[in-house]
Amino acid sequence: MSSTATGSALEVSPKERLAELFDELAELAGQRNAIDGRIVDIVAEIDRDGLWGATGARSIAALVAWKTGCSSANAKSVAAVAHRAEEFPRCVDGLR
Image (cartoon, rainbow, N blue to C red; front, side):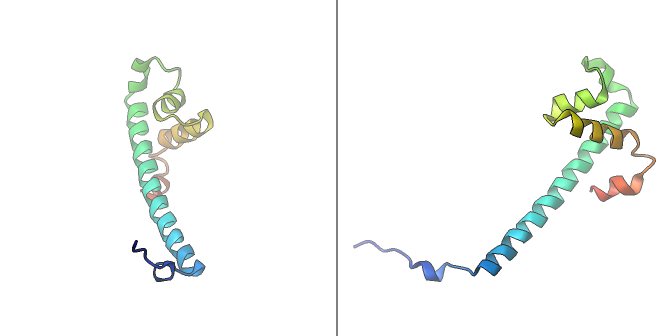
């Protein structure tokens, strides 16, 4: 004789499940923003100190695309934000 739990004891309503999923999305989005903020910080330092020239990459955006595996369009956006991070500290702080 096998023992199996009844499904009704573990079931949650669709509304409750949706709330759980939204909570998880919010948590993941916050983590992603923090990661994006740190990436911008790293790219800003590499750009500011001219470190990317030693990599053989043709541009800071090309370096970002290469090292992060993102698209060239996303890499250009990251590089642009990083290049102007000191001009827009509130925007960069919002990523953290």
